[in-house]
Structures are given as structure tokens and as C-alpha cells.
Image 1: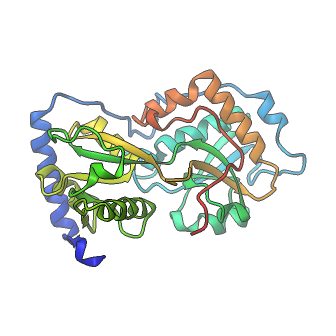
Image 2 (image 1 turned 90 degrees about the vertical axis):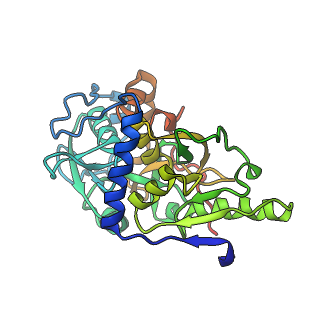
Image 3 (image 1 turned 45 degrees about the horizontal axis):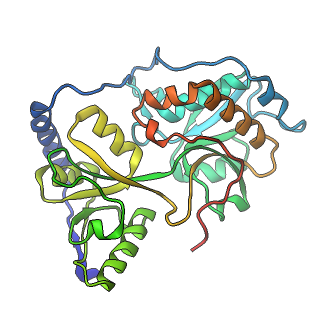
Length: 317
């Protein structure tokens, strides 16, 4: 397997410099594209009224981590889902917007706790916060310890530079022979390895895998034509496509392919909060606030038609 992989390790500082230069070139050739609000004030954030049905669905024994607040853990690691505002202190992004909508629906103030993503299971189990809203996918293993309310599709996207001749990637043969960027040891790599296995078994050209030590270096490779396509989580790529115009989507797959695994709020198992969050989310979908909120961050393509409590998740491998 390793003889088909191409490893490219580029220094972070050099990669970042090249990335900025590549984006400057791309911007010069593009019309102005969308901008997003990264101010701490978030004046354009969507707000809603209290949802009585959601309040009624809270279990009688549930006690919030902080009285009068919906306390939510978010890892501010990458826009558009979550990042720090221009004050380097306030957490903003689509996850923060959604958390605010849920807090409004429950008639509570919002208290965001910034975390390192890997720490969320311990913090949630110990009761430090009521919920985790931080791009957590539903898996059967996680469901053994936590409850889930889905709020966004878990998508991985195929993206190419804007001038690429590639128009659509929808099935394994579409990636045969391509120089493809993905992330090692991830679900997206698992999917592409299986697609590649199927192609090779049919006599098609193998994928030329490219791995990078930072996002800046991988984007330089894509924009410069040294790679043909990137396949990674859709949200940050969609955000980049909408705000820079340098790349565009040519296809997407659910992160659990061939199964389904959506992104969800995580709460403590049997805490009595899950059903209320599902009712609140479906109320937000029905009144349109949910979709408008996602559109603020250019990821409306990941909208769900309906929120579910503890749906089937990614199986154990």
C-alpha cells in the first residue's frame, strides 16, 4: 500500500507563506467573494424566542451545569464551525450560532466553554457542561456513553482549484489516477482507500495519495496544480470556497460512507436533556432560523431536513 502513497512534509512557516502568496494570486484573478463576520459582537447572529415544547421535553430530574444558562463546550479549532473572534477570546462560528439558538429555545443564556476537542468526553461525563456542540459525529461506540441530537450532515467534500477541468466526482472510477490530498488515519482516508481498492481490482489507475503536515501546504499544492483534488471535511473547504473563490466543490459523501454518520450535540447518557434538544432543533428547522444560521457561514449544504435522537451511527470497525 505504501508504494502508492506520496508523503509531502512541508514546514508550517514556509507553507503558510506560500499559502498566502497562492491566495493573493487567486484573489487577483477572482471577483470579490463573500465575507464573514469574525467580530466578537456577532451583530448578525440569528436569535429566536423560547420554544415551550422544548422546555416541556426536559427531564424532571435534569439540573443545568450553571443555573439559568445552557453551558456548551466548543473547540475553537477551525472556521467556519468554530474559531476565535478578532479579540482572540470570543468563540464564534456555526457551532456557536447553533448553541445560541438552542439556548434561546430553552429560555436560557448561553455559556460557551472553550475546550481542546479531545477533552470533551471527560468534561461532559463529569458534568462541567450540559452539552458538547463541536463537530462530534455519531458513532455506535460513543452512543454507549453519550446521547446525541443530530444538527448537521457529516459531509466530506471533493474540492478542486477553480480552473480545474474536473467537474464531478461521484463514484470510485472518478478518482482513478488522480493526485488526491486527504488526511491520514481518518474516515475520509478509509473511504478513498476502499474506492482505490475497487478501482485497482478493475484494472484502473491507482490514486496518488498526498499527505501534508498542515492545511496551508496542502492548499498550496492544490492551487499550484501539484495535486488534482482534496477530499476532507466539507465545512472548512466550503467556507474557503465561498470566501476566497479559489476552490470549488465537485462532489461530497457522508462521513460514514457507506453508512451514515451525522454531526450531533453530545449529552450525558440518560441525563434527560437529549429529547429537549431534538425538539428545539426541529423547531429551529421548521421556523427557518436553522438554515439562515448555517448560511451565515456558507455551509447551508450541510443542513438536515430533520433532527433525530440517537440515530444509527458509524459502526465499530
